Length: 282
Length: 282
Image (cartoon, rainbow over all chains, first blue to last red; front, top):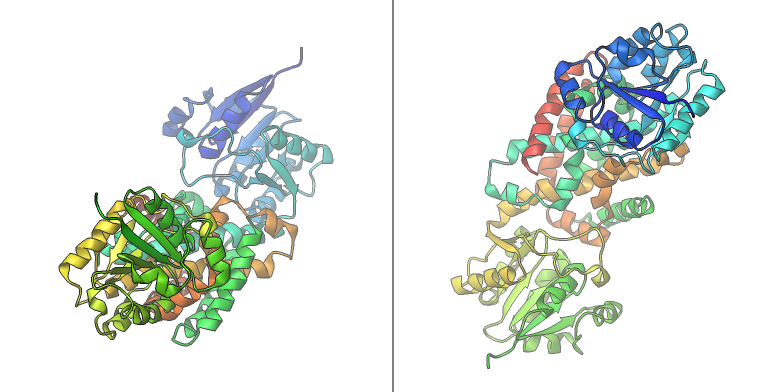
């Protein structure tokens, strides 16, 4: 009989809980969960066997997935490096990779365990009660290995993500952080600023509220994301976000000058170009 | 037997075609369609009986719905005022109301016929092939009457929209234009600018393309809208859009200054406020 492998999920929230549901279906897997806060452990216990302590949760694990916020990863790695088995694989799911990689590179021995990952999966709802076994299906998972990662460890990470239906993609942490700054972090800020502006105006007339249609709801949906997770992301990827936000703001400035009568051709051309770009991605 | 009423749809595209599908189900209604372009008439003929000429389409109509772009409404009204029956109700569905109302006020006699309307319904796809009988169900339709509209005419407009499942809401054209500038026109520009920035970067690395997740798709969906319709909207509502775009851009400028290390508290507070606002609207 094949040996059972233990997979431990640290931070059983939306992504961790979804992993638990996806892995539950697999044979030969024992799942263990852990959350640092007692109140979160209570919620986690509805989905997964929760260990009595962090040490207990991780010491026998074959695979540990850190699903807590970006800013907590390096502290967890420092603890784990002396607790885990020699062959334990550690993964994370955090949205910023450059700083996670830089900090991991300073932890002696962690290269034998930790392969940084970022699945492009999620919802605007947080917490294990929104967990979804299919959340990773068909989704890209960026993998940004450490220079000291053995090839076999990275391959193990690939296999892990494939098993839950995801599509692992190898990349460089800087390119990763630049890309998601444009496709995820900047849009999050833009949607949030529109919500703020809406909040300042919504009580001027009932018409503002009635004028909320499906376009506005789609555009602002991401603004409902977890504020403390997003605070972490902006803190850790500020440079890349600034790069694009500054370009974006300068372009708005140019467009604003063309908000006057007689510019219909200018706007039609602009919208034609951007419509074509949008149609090509979906 | 009750007399049949003739409803004529001018501009059988997405919204006009959807009206045709919704009205087809109703007893006692004869539907007639018209498009100015021959190629559009051909497409319209798959959904509705198309008249041989504009005059023929409108002269016996009890209700005429102008579903063509905002910029074409006043020219159509000038033609219609001398063609229609004395009791014909004319409606439009265009997204900007201030300029439509101002121009209509200059057409003698049109107050006996024309009630300006704007249904908050639509899709990012154009043309009658995307028409949907349920597109108006539960959707707000703003009605901004002309000063010379008889009360009974406005009531007739209300009844028309209720019959296709919509929720008519009476308002002032200026408040309308300001509200949709914030909830629809500004977001359209913002999503388009992000698409443009994405277009400038997408070929730098395959990672940019792989980093497109559901959040980016939701945020940019509106950018797929009809460019010439959106050119019209920006031309006709430039002042109100500028009002909000300028506030938006100044806020981005402020936020940009806080894109640096050590501002995590600032960003968490900002995202907490905007998350709360977003959760309250859906």
